[in-house]
Amino acid sequence: MTGTSKPKGKFLMLLKNDFLASARVISLFYIALVLLIGIFGICVAVSGADGVSMELASKFTTARNVSIILSILVSFLLIFVTFFFVVYDFFKSLFSPQGYLSFTLPVSSNQLLGSKVIVYGGWMLLSYAAFMFTSVFLMNYTADQVIGMDKISLAETFLAMLGDFPSTTQIVAYLVYMIMMFFVIFLSFVSIVYFSITVSHVRLLQKHSIVASIVIFFATAIAFLVISFKMTEIVNFVMVFNEDKTLSFGLLRPDEYLTGNALGMEVTPGFAFLILDIGMFFLTSYIMHKKVNLK
Image 1 (tube, one colour):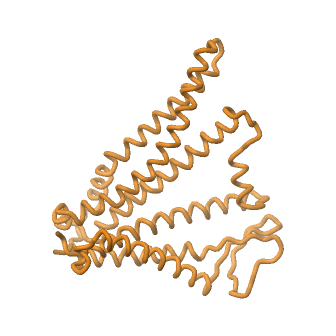
Image 2 (tube, rainbow, N blue to C red):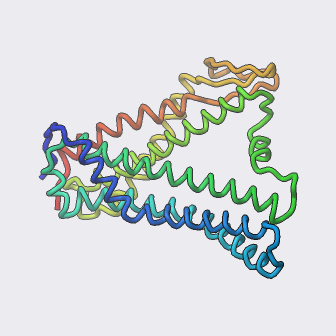
Image 3 (cartoon, rainbow, N blue to C red):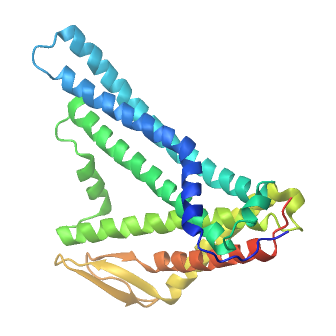
């Protein structure tokens, strides 16, 4: 049995249902994270208030330190919880006995797949952003207030690791570049996971679907990297941070290099991954529609 194409206007409802189903568990971690950060804020306010006894201030300081550790731990676990649901919900809703119901919904295979990619791709990005924000904010506070090293700034350290970017324009351009790359990488990750699970449920591989999905995942990921490197060799489009604080874009030939202290960021891999993601989406949808054998 395979998915049938029923292009009716039910996509938004499908998107809503996928979001609500995924939020039942994932949202609990966000609630816990918000509560821990709230406890952190209360502890900071109380321990630093005038008229508070040293004993009480010490207790709130301890609670503050514990809340910092737990906040970072919860935000880290959130990434793995989200990853679990990226795989589990996709499999359960489409390739378990529940798949019969999913494939009879008045939506096309493109819409079934698109809803999963949007919802869980969004959750993955959000979980990573929550981890980065929580870690940087709390660790910066720890370095500045708890450890007592007032001159330590994680933001400055991070920028120093990126290189010598003397202008605001170059810093902003780099941050935009990094955000774009993270988005594309997460999209590629979700696309490869869904492609691997889908292919592993064609009739030929169905008996060993778990092993097959793992093999297909790594093979596809390696193929993504190889293709992106090959495309870079053919068309090496770069964003250049010039010595005079300006920003420029250009193509580098295979035997050409940047001169002086100019720093270049390759943009071609991002576009390569994005093109591959689009192709992967339609290929996965086609296999869902034509080749998948539901149990």
